[in-house]
Image 1 (cartoon, rainbow, N blue to C red):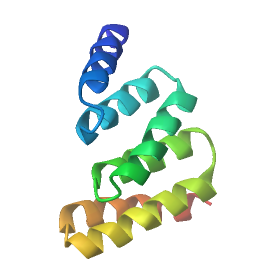
Image 2 (image 1 turned 135 degrees about the vertical axis):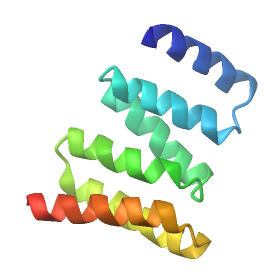
Image 3 (image 1 turned 45 degrees about the horizontal axis):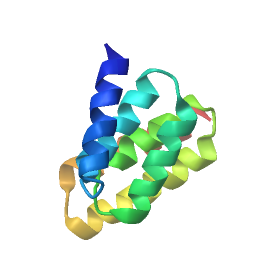
Length: 107
């Protein structure tokens, strides 16, 4: 059940607030249950605290797409693309580039 996972992740985050994966997982769970505001807040905080945590960019962009804010989604994808190039993360770069292209095609 998602609420159980959310509670577990909240506890983990309280014991280790620096763990980027826990924050990322919590943001994803909030996204899954439709709490876009909390998901956005956690993703935003994580981008500031750990901008090189490349996993956030794809899902944060998807969140903005679900919120029907294509401009913010584009910006997040573009930021992620820059980070992936800097880190030479070819796999994530490919995913983000595809997501950005698909978004632009849909416009």
